[in-house]
Image (tube, rainbow, N blue to C red; front, side, top):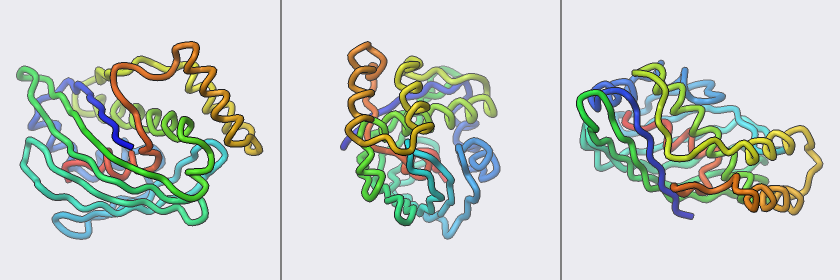
Length: 212
């Protein structure tokens, strides 16, 4: 599954790059982050606690960076594992572009896949959870470096409500999850001008641990 995304962060490109190279900033912004460790100049690993519908686990992920071109962008590949909960793996091309002296546009193109229980609970719920995690990270990150971010997607109230409802009911089936999200989509709560794909836990490992 391929997905694309864009965020406008109210800070200069150099400031954004520096902040994305600060482990403490990343740990503070990543939802559920427990640890963040640099293995080498191009490798790092992290442990994140997260919940996707009825599946809750501690995921350990490792990423590798390539095509590093500071402060313009790079390519990142990685995989996260959560035992019986499943795994997420993929990669992304990420870029930073200046938008005037005090703003930066971060864009990415990513491919990802999930397996195990994560794959059984339904793609739309995984998508919805990934979107929430990305929004939480970018909101927290932007506030640290300059103020609230300007995201492409609007608030998906119906989608978030479905995710919250599913988390309260661990016995819900994958079919029921898909049905609920289809209804939400029919009401116009899903979608938007940018595509969200199967990032799930990889969103915090691949898209969040960027430019390190």
